Structures are given as C-alpha cells and as structure tokens.
Amino acid sequence: MSGIVWALIGVAVAVGLAGSGSACGVGIAGQAASGVVTEDPSKFAKVLIMQLLPGTQGIYGLLVGFITLSKIGILGGAPADLDLATGLLIFAACLPIGIAGLISAIYQGKTSAAAIGIVAKKPEQFGKAMLFPAMVETYAILALLVSILAVSGIPV
Image (cartoon, rainbow, N blue to C red; front, side, top):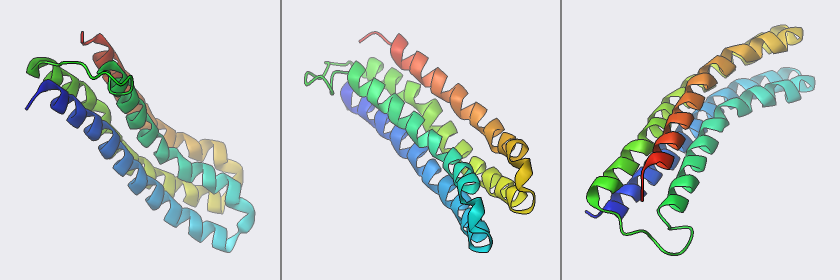
C-alpha cells in the first residue's frame, strides 16, 4: 500500500473511532437525561449540557481528520505523493485521538450519566457535578494536542 493510503486510514481511524466513542457516550448520557426530564422537564437545559459533553471527542477526531486531509493535499485537490514511511507516520499521528477519543468518550458518557443523577436530586450542585465528566475530557484534549502536533510536524 502506498503512503497516501496509510495516511487516509489514519484519517479514518481518527474520525471513525473518536466519532464512535462520542456516539456511545452521548447515548449513555442521553438515556440518563431522558429519565430525568421525564420526571422533571425543568431540568432539561442542565441535563442536555451534561449529555453533550461526550460529543467533543468526535469533534476532536474530525478536527485532526481535516488537518490531516489538508496536510496531504486531499482538501486542496492535489494529493501529495507520500512514500510509505511518511504515510505510516501520519497514520501513527492520528492514533492518539482515535484511541483516546473512543475510550474517553465512552467513559465520559458514563460519568455524565452519574452527574445527571446528581442534578436530578440536587440541581443546585450542577457546577460540581459537571467537574466529574470534565476531568475525563482532559485526556481527550491531551490526545488531540499530541495528534495535532504530530501531524503538523511530519514533513510532506
């Protein structure tokens, strides 16, 4: 396989895994949020924010995907002629956000569901409850930074 194929597989991994994790995480949190809103519709805005938190990993994967597609010339209409080593480097650079995005989004969804339980019983504790899923987000942000720096640092 040529370098461009490996680079495109890297894009697919970044976007696909991070997006899949976000879909799972948002779904997990959404189930908890639905139960709360059924009991008390006035808590909709607070639980919606909690549900949306695991969706950021999908955005991070998409961002790395766009940066990579731009870097290799796919978005510009003139794909670069990448050797195998460069393609594999780009593939490897996309792995952090793909893998960490997948795992962190799922666990952030679970943490958000638990935080939604806090909001259901004590809505005044919303700020504190939001800190728990936000802590999981930290690792997705670190993976995003590593992937962006790695993709940007590979000469094409």
